[in-house]
Every structure is written in structure tokens, then in C-alpha cells.
Image (cartoon, rainbow, N blue to C red):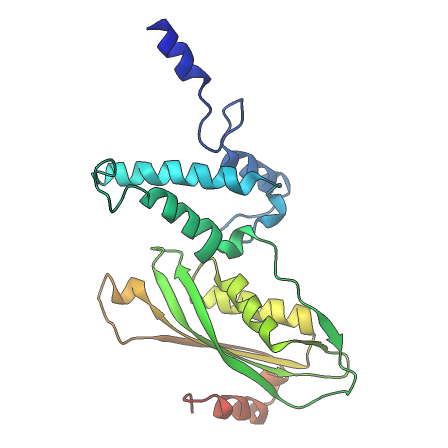
Length: 244
């Protein structure tokens, strides 16, 4: 009996250290010490040290197993759910919410050598996200309009898609996600104007609640020239396919 108790006391909690501190607690303490927030749609990659994502994966798996147990799902004998806790943990940390835990994509910026100053539109770019209220999928498209100037940094078209994936790959609400995306693109490109339009279906509305399957949310952010010049704004909106 004593031997069993001693062995149990030596077990390290999933994702913890020899002192028994969960890795999530250590990461959270670093964020708080830096005076930063760790909201659902924040990126916390700067506070995760090498090797800790594997520990965090183990911890999330253990806690997800607890959720399944509390839902009275027999994961020991149900062949369909035996590895569900691990699969869900990997999905959250490495796929659908990777934008929280990984550094931003490397974006190569080029000077505007030809002094381009004509409207450029990129899209539609696929949006894959989840609402931070219910963790239900948010799926849709985004269009980005850029009015460059001679000082604007030019980035490759595929890089816009990478930025969208990084920002929206977190638990989000659409109203905040589009602002985060606009802020990031403004920082990277420094254009005279920026326009972003996002249209998404929310599974928290179609899969649950009122179960309204055809409703979508459409919102926009206008910066600089697009905010001040109604003619430019109309041109951008008119050029978006299917959005006239």
C-alpha cells in the first residue's frame, strides 16, 4: 500500500515539470510577467520555449480526456473515440488554432521600385476560424484592397493568404479578427489606403442556437484613402466578384 502511494506521488502531471507545475501555468506566468494579455485571439508564441509545445499537447490531451469522461463516453472500449482526446488536442494546437501558438509567417517585403499607385485587389482568400464563444467553425472569404504609394512595401500575393491564415487561425469573433488583419497588413505594407471585406458563415448560428443555415456576416474595414475617398471605396466594392 505504501509503495503504491509513493509511486503515485512520483508521477509527473501531463505537460508538467518535476515540481508538478503544468506547462500551461508556466507559459501563463511568463505572459503575465510581461504585462501582456492571453485572450483567445492573442498570439502567445513569444512565451513558448523550444520543446514546450509537445508538453502542452500532452496536457491538453489529458484535460480533453477528462471532458470525454465527464460526457460519459467510454473511450476505453469505443473504438471510434479511443484516440479522440489526442486528435482533438493536435487539431487545436497544431491546426485550427495554430495562429495562437506559432510565430507569424515569414513575409518577404520588396520596395515599390516602379512607384505603383493603382488599386490592387487580392481575393477571395479562404477564412478558416472558430468563434471564441462556442469554438464552432467560422468559414468564409476575405477580399483585400491596397492602394500603394512609392514607400509601400510590396509583398507576394500568397503572403496575404498566409497572413489571413495566421490571424484567423485562432478563436475569434469576426468583428475583431478583421481589425487584427487590417492592422497587420497596414504594418507590413504601409499603403496609402487599405480595404478589407470579410463574409463568413458561423456554425454557432447554423449548427446550434437558432439553426439558421443561410445567414452570413459581412463586415469591412476601410483605412486611409479608402476611408476618405468615396469614389475609390465604390471602385473597390464594385470590383469584388459577386459583391456588387
